[in-house]
Length: 157
Ligand SMILES: [Zn+2]
Image (cartoon, rainbow, N blue to C red):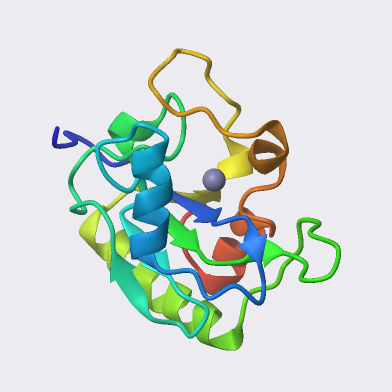
């Protein structure tokens, strides 16, 4: 797996699954393998209970945001869809917010100069680098305003 030479962006994602679904990194890895990826696309997964799971090695090139994988690390929060309607929604648990704050703090320290934003803040780059996601997902992921969150937490945006 290729190693990144730079890390400018910390990109937040959601799994686009209903709030009641207790998805794990192993499940997401299976979905991504089924889509033809060599491994799970994200570097870290935050489960509903706040457990942080490893995805790809932190310094490996991920497969989570078309056109920006060579310069970004990808974090996925499990959830993002309303249980009843299936519509994009901020469904994240207090444990997930606590874990996200700690994790992004570690990443910001590891990658000085990197900015925090959400997947939807990056326009899709149709350069064929292997990531094709449903249009609706691209529009809403991670289902909350990642930059506003990062700003409130004092992280670089
Ligand atoms: Zn995403």
